Length: 391
Ligand SMILES: Cc1cc2nc3c(=O)[nH]c(=O)nc-3n(C[C@H](O)[C@H](O)[C@H](O)COP(=O)(O)OP(=O)(O)OC[C@H]3O[C@@H](n4cnc5c(N)ncnc54)[C@H](O)[C@@H]3O)c2cc1C
Picture 1: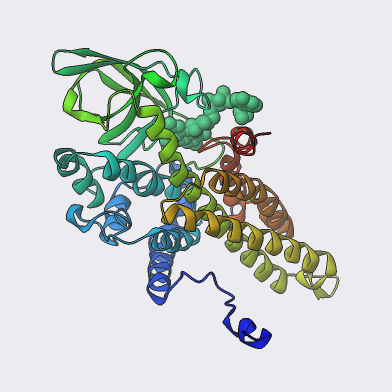
Picture 2: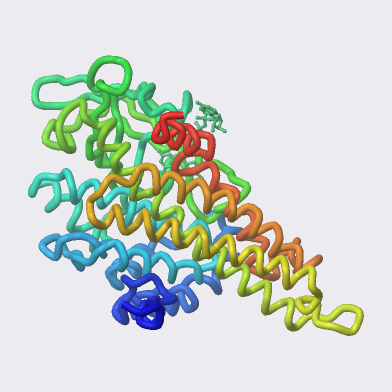
């Protein structure tokens, strides 16, 4: 093949996005602009967004993008999910994005993968339809990074499991109908953990306080208590004592989603900042025309581009069911760290307005701080990469 022919074949876009994906992206963008962004500030002040948003998102098919149509899903792939998450950048609300992702990317995929037909009928189908809200219950007051050390215990009693313990930091925790819950059913360490489906109407379950946070303020993050809660053994998800492996496997989708969302949010912030820089003048010129800003945006966009290719590469591997722990972890680490710089720099060009809630950037700056903590901290990402690289 000649050099000219090779050049003609190179596409600027990542090759797997199609017109159908762009339609998903545009539909979600419209949903965000009409139903979320105008209210993001109001919901932050209220400390919660309306529950009806789950149903509205479900009506667009957002909770079932990769779920089999048998359970009400669309049966599409990870590229379609990426298009959905990229559209979500226009919500200007880390809170709503996080709450919806817990449903679509963090709880329902594990249920779809491991659940029995009965479990899917009872939990998955109504959750895809937005009639049930799901939460993921792993972290505890004693620690979130060290999953193998969790203490919430489930003892087998006849045909039941009896659960006692406490969870902390649980997103959607105050209004979840069920929790994909990690409990200790066996020995200490990673070999004694199981996943169960826990209906929150179970006797002995209580929601403690809703935590006050510095960002993602419209998302409910709760402390949960389990006092001798009795659930049938048929609610065990997958095999007993295999929960740690399921959690680690599920983290790949969660971390990939976190990277995609971080990238889309960064791109939105830079575009907003460039628009502001084109309109605001100082010393007789639009501030965005000063070289310091043109170079800063060039640098940020270069980082975003690099993050995209790493993330899309990780997505491609996951989409093909290939080993991708290294790539997903690197993508999560790189994008969550970069988002700190991007939000800081973009806030700067807004001057005093950046420090108010007049523009979305102030909220974004607060919300993205979570990126290096949630879904596994940056330190844990580095630990995983070091192990993968046998350092
Ligand atoms: C807003 C919000 C929403 C959340 N939603 C959920 C949810 O829905 N479900 C859920 O289960 N959890 C959720 N979490 C919990 C989140 O996953 C944990 O906060 C996170 O995993 C860190 O755990 P930790 O807070 O216990 O910190 P710790 O594990 O106590 O870590 C504290 C610090 O020590 C560092 N550290 C730990 N181990 C090492 C090591 N080996 N080497 C070097 N440094 C180390 C960490 O990186 C961190 O900087 C949420 C948290 C927040 C803030």
